[in-house]
Length: 127
Image (cartoon, rainbow, N blue to C red):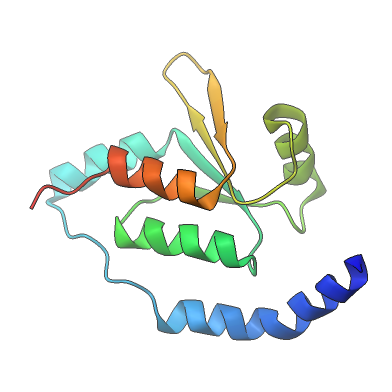
């Protein structure tokens, strides 16, 4: 069963990545000063993800929508990233957003809906 899903991912993966590219949302436009503040806040965030995971694609699209420059770490092809995710976060599931506070304490969010909710709340754009 595990190999069946891997095969499906290998076959559908390129199509999913093409769809992600073609449906890229327009990012929020901020002043240079505002974007610098957002970029500084994003240095506290790291997204562990697989390139062809549909839930990871959903989170990456949200990052683009909010013009967030978050570090992406491949947990699929990097054993080191996968091991860090498992050892520090407690699970190797993706997507996972690592949120580090100013004291160096990390919080790990594992569900795409929770991650998107966090991003929308923290980086809400006032219109």
